[in-house]
Length: 344
Ligand code: B12
Image 1 (tube, helix red, strand yellow):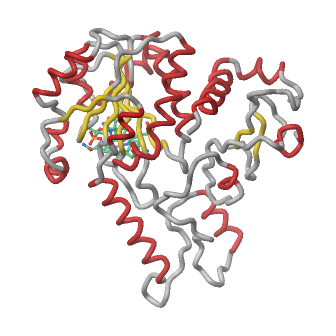
Image 2: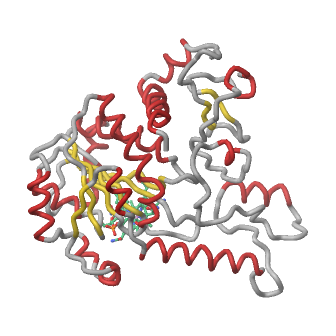
Image 3: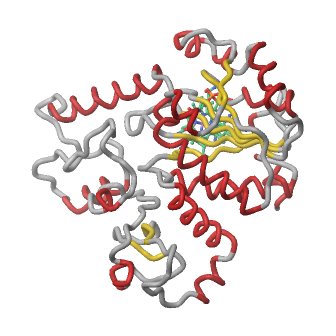
């Protein structure tokens, strides 16, 4: 994605996170000269519509912005085709073609209720049947989604992406993907070479250490890391939070952050990692966070922002939000359940 666009959106989200009420009160009418003004998807609305960032007006009522492309943020309804051509994201290489509709019941008794269900979830509801069997399209889509999930698990993150993001790469104790799946414990341990490389290339005791890992979906990294990562870096810069040299762990598990914690002793580790693919999305990314992770860190002290992908939390929005979570972790010197109890 375009770096300037990421910066514009990150700024807008940060402003909204910081002072939502002040912003609404001061910005009353966007004009054509409002450079940097972006149309956002209004995810609080019951009907799919755009709003203008920093305003309660719908985009339709703001002709001044017509020549700017709206940016879709958080479309959890996900059945509106209107938003797709508007998005600056590149859908050409999307694994799954768009469905016209998921509803396959030919004469539903309650069509409105059925439509309402289908709008609420991307799960396979109301797909109908052919006699006792699934319809051909349902079955093919299942096979396609399953194939995409398998590809995501067994795939490899392209080196050019890591190079573009200036992430150096290290390995865990895992030799190959089969072993990765069967031995989660090995995915939690860094190889000896990895430990040496990390010591050589990274600063000791950074405030924040960022890591990325393919985890259970290389597709998640390929599709979402760039946007989430760049907007996260920008949000940290805006908040004045310094970070160490980020890197990539091949075939890593969430708890690999504990070894990084031992080696570099950062205050906070943020790990972008591919989620186990399901039959709805194979490219969903998570960001796991932990205050001072160490060997033996308990899971309750970690936090996760999950479902980062174009059909879930948009990557740029997630990246911008993550900065404020890190800020909170630093403030309370805790994460996960410990953070919740300190906060309340
Ligand atoms: C697999 C899974 C589990 C497995 C993990 C087993 C394992 N060893 O892999 C089990 C069944 C134990 C589990 C339990 C829980 N999970 Co879970 N889990 C998932 C799932 C489906 C995939 C996670 C994944 O792919 N991780 C990446 C791989 C590479 O990580 P890994 O190193 O192999 O495994 C680690 C992570 O999976 C992590 N983990 C798993 N769940 C959770 C939840 C939280 C809050 C945290 C901090 C970590 C965490 O623990 C594993 C061991 O370190 C996600 C769905 C999703 N969309 O992400 C939900 C998900 C992450 N889980 C969730 C929840 C709520 C939980 C529980 C709190 C449920 C409960 N009430 O007990 C517990 C907490 C467990 C914990 N670690 O603290 C939510 C988190 C929501 C949120 N944003 O906070 C998710 C997003 C599901 C959902 N949509 O509600 N989970």
